Image (cartoon, rainbow, N blue to C red):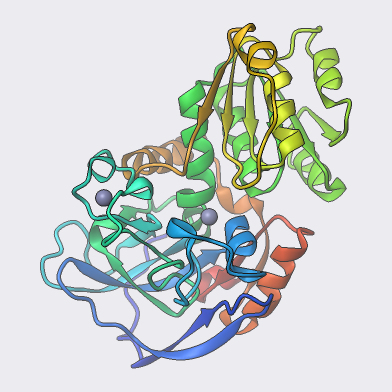
Length: 362
Ligand SMILES: [Zn+2]
Ligand SMILES: [Zn+2]
């Protein structure tokens, strides 16, 4: 599926701004010129994230790393290198590339670990689609150091979901460890929850349970064969999970919703010595440390996105597993209809939504 580089870019391109009032604004921009260590990507696929909706689309809620600075939106970009600036060492014209969606300073301790998401430099940390131009445009200017090679076996729409969605899920699962010993509970079956279920299958999880508030999401998780049992969100969820596990609870819980009640369920439905990881953003939680966690010897992990090296590992695994993230994409739109794409994602009545270009649109 190797494709050759396309024509030189037009001097102007279209890009999408998010004013923060549940609308999109499609504008004309000059096509950027790559400087030292930078590349110009022809965008091929750009997926919409729950955090785009939560912190930017409806209103500009974010602060710090989630502060939207009026740039071109889209932090899940995947495309093809069509131009390289001077000093590029690992990517050439024609290469297929996933963009790790936060460009870090490269020198702080977290950046040196590959976790540019946690870069501590206020001056140099810039997330694509938040503080620097992102993937909802015809072209994207990216730092070469932020790129991951996309294997030929994966499509650009597979690649677009690796950094934020599947990468976040994989990172959390690697932290708590998943094997055939484990029954896993996933609270929240949005894109990250579904990705978590798909990876749990490949890692050999023995049983996978999903909880969500939306019937459509429960249906999708069941239709895709990702969960063995799906349960509507409710006050009896902990008891229901215990019933499904011989009274014990699950060995592993992955919280993907950010909802207070679901967070409590994720902790309380884990069995003695169980491990829980929080991936869902925002909100709060109330639990009793002694009764709910400590006395049952449970471990609670926090996890934020993933690292560049783990992304490289993940794309290799996806090919080995024949796991294609694009299976979670239920709707594709051209850039000209980006308003419909965001409105649909905001409705929640969909799986993953992608804005696509060229061969990815068919
Ligand atoms: Zn995201
Ligand atoms: Zn840094």
